[in-house]
Image (cartoon, rainbow, N blue to C red; front, side, top):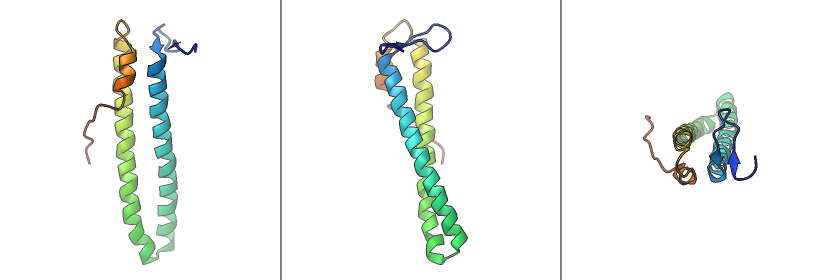
Length: 111
């Protein structure tokens, strides 16, 4: 990777450095959420195993937070997928515009 483009797509397509940076930023966000989910799941499991009423009550909020995080990961992957498809399709247009569009589409995820 030379800083301006990425040609690792196999078909010779190139992606603007800004697009690659935007993808990397989104993947870091996803990884951070997944790391947080791992901690939440560990705490939920400990609370469940303890069978203490206060800990079991706390799990309600933790599970809600976990569900919210999962929805956010789905949104991020949806945005990434759409942005990637646009960047591949827009090989003849300005791909730097694709970097600005990552994360801006707000699709409703089913509850």
